[in-house]
Every structure is written in C-alpha cells, then in structure tokens.
Length: 212
Image (cartoon, rainbow, N blue to C red; front, side, top):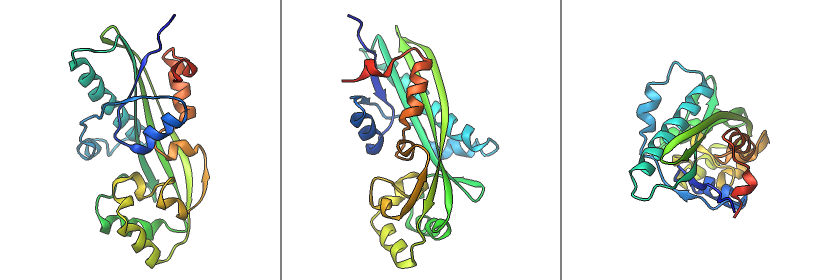
C-alpha cells in the first residue's frame, strides 16, 4: 500500500485551514516566520501576480527549512503556502493593520470592483530534500457594496478587517458587503482549490490520495 504524502499548511489563517478541511484534507499547520512587509518593500517593481507568488515561495522556503530542522522530517510531504493581496486603483494592498488604514480603504473601494490575487506554492519534499515545486497566481474580481460611513465604521470597529488582505473577508462579517464574486470563491478565502489541484498534479500528486 502506497502511503500518501503528509500535508503541511504553511499558514496561520483559520480560513485556509477550514477550506482544506472542508475539502477532505487534514493538514498539519507549520507557520512561516517571513516578514511580509519587509519582503514587500523589495518587490515594488514586480507585477502584482509575481509579488504574491514570490511571497508564497518565500513562505514555502521558510516552512521547508523549519521542517528540515525537525528531528522527524517526513520522508514524503507536500507543503502548501499562499499569499493574498488586493489589487485596486493600480496598487496592491495587504493587511491594513490599523483602523485608520482599513477605514480609508473601505471608503475608497465601496461601490467599486477590485481584484483579489492569491499566490500559491506547492512544494514536494522527499527523502529530506525538495524534489519538485510549482506555483501560480489566481485572480478573482470582487464587487463591493456601496455602504455608508456608519457601516464602514461599524465593520472596522469589529477588528475583523485589520488582519486580512484587502481589509475584508468573504466568510465573515465582510461577506455582508460583497455584492458579487467573479472567479474562484475559495481563492478569496486564501487558498484556491482549483489552483492547488493543478499544482499538486504538476508535482505528481493526485489530490484524491490526500483525502482523509
């Protein structure tokens, strides 16, 4: 009997973990220590898709290094890492971190469309070394509701938008203010299942072999 690779999710995102669990996987979470803001500062000249993919790759490198540092490194594992950013008005934005930034962003994007871009990296580890890797970006169009200032303030006050890409969630309170999604909804939640399916195939893994 062939043993399926161990699945490692290199993210602290509850939404990403929930998406994978709902889709039949039971990954181990191993969070990277990548300083996203510092890395972003070095990527200003790159196209949006490249930026998010490079962030996902940096997280993969950090997670794989942490995996190799363990006493019991899996003989066969697949590491999944992602990074999401909102492309709006010609610029990328990640987590707003502060209420002022989140409030200003919502007042600009309400009633308008933006692109949520998620970079994905799938890394295959075998016999203590990286044997293969594949990466891709997925873009989804989000149409935001034209909410008033009081609603923006109430949403920001919940704290939810401060630590999420683009200052909104689809599966939380922010979902009330998303009028439409054109593309893969799971990508908006932080990890696109169709994209990961393709990338798993590229590194020689049948996703059904990973189902618990």
